[in-house]
Image 1: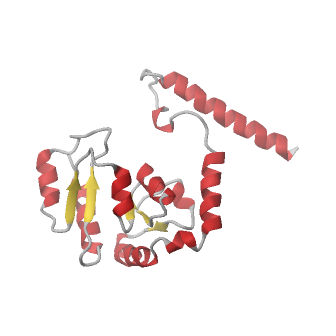
Image 2: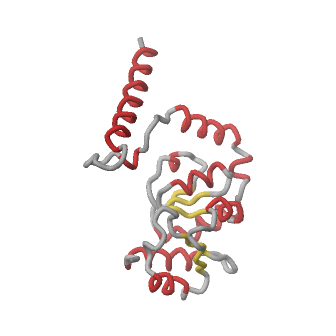
Image 3: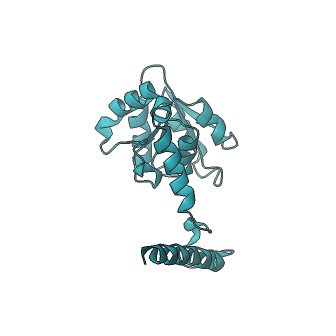
Length: 182
């Protein structure tokens, strides 16, 4: 199932692309088939939209992309690591970087896309220290566990153990910070 809002968003993005560019959409590899065949066919009717098979490696799509548009998710972070321009339509933790293009209003999407594509990788090469610093901070502030599995109920496999790992990691970070402040 694809909601009418998601379909409208895809149409809006496709309409905002520069002439000759295509929007590649790929289902999340963890849930192939979540979007029905009928809905995929509807998306394919949009002239500059291409549907990538769920088994296509996201890394390959990123490598060949001029820019990546995300609402949230790890694809944006992978694009950041590959030094591909990222345009966020939502709020993400990597969106706090000044090297990520943010779209607050969809009417700005076309302008932001042009800016990101024209700037290309140079946004990173001209700001290598900021890029490396952000990666370092992401790694230094990370903790063990999977934050996507912390919602109750914890009956999922390893759910309670995962929540305990995260809590312990946060506790250790806070204690270290408090010790440094003394």
